[in-house]
Image (tube, rainbow, N blue to C red):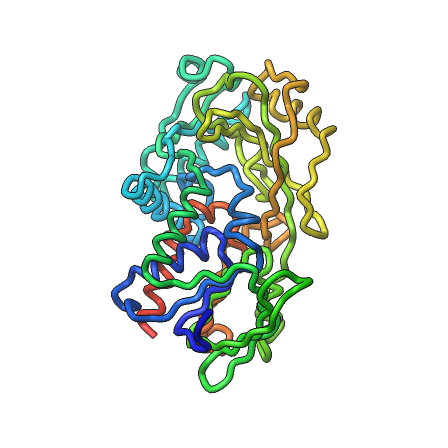
Length: 379
C-alpha cells in the first residue's frame, strides 16, 4: 500500500468483496480511481465463500421482490456469462426439488413462488418421470430446475481478483482494520499489517468505504466511531457440515428436499463438485464461535435424513468433508433478507455496509456488485 489516500476502500475479500472490486475497477466512472481491497486473512475467500455447496442457485425460494430473489435471478445470468467469457469451470447439471407423499401441495407453492420471482424454467415431474431421470431416488413428485448448476468457486474468485488487479486494484491481505473514524468527509482507517505476532501499524484514508467483511461485518461496523449500535444487526453463527459419499454417485443432478419450514436452510441436500464427487449437506446448528470441526458421529443422522429420498444410502460411506458458517441475522424463525445499508440510512455519507450475505451470496455476487457500482456512480 504505497499511498495514504484512496478513493474507495473495500474491507473483506470474500466472493462479494472481490466482485465489487472487479466491477468498480471495470466501470468507466471509476477508471482513474484508487481502490484498495483489504483482507484480514492471508488469502481471499477463506470463510463463507469457500465453505459452501458451490451451487449456482435459480432464485426459487425467496419472497418476491426481496434482495435475495432479485440478486439471485439476475446474478445467475451474470455468473454464467462470466464463466463462459473467462472459461471458469461450471456445469448446468440441473436440480431436482423432491416431495414425499403428502408434500405435493408444498411443491406447487414453491413453483408459484419461483414464477413470482421471474424463474420461468421450472418443470413439474410426477413420480414416473422422476424415476426415469434418477432411478435411485424415492419421491412422489419433483420440480426440475434446469438452470441450477455448480461452479469452481476458487477459480471464480481468482478470476475476479486477477481482473481487479489488472485494472489497478491494490489487494492487501493480512490487513486487519482496528479502528475507523469519519473525518472531513473521509474515512480514516487504522490497520495492522502482517502476522498478529509480527505486524506494523498503518493508517490511510478513503472517500468511500464498503464493509463486505462477511462473518466479521458486524465487528467491523462496531469499530466505526460514532456509528449508532442500533444500526448494526445482530449476528448469529449458523454452522453447516458437509459429508462426502464414497464411491460413484447414484445421481447425475443436484437433489434437494423441500426447504425447512423454519427458514434456517434448504435441508440436507445432495450436490456434486466439478470432479463428480458426491457430498451431502449442510445441516443447521447455531454456534457461539467460528469452528469448522465436524463430528463424524453425525453420519447416522445424515443417513436418516437422506434416506427419505435416497433409501439405499449406506452410512458407512459418509465421511466428513468440511464445514461452513453462515452469518444469519435471525435464529431462523422468520425470513431475513440481505441487508445493504447506504450512507443516508446511517448518517455516514460514502459508507456502504453489507450484512447477512449468506446463500445465495455466491450466485448473487455480481448482481450485488453492479448495484453498489450504480449507487456510487449516482453520489
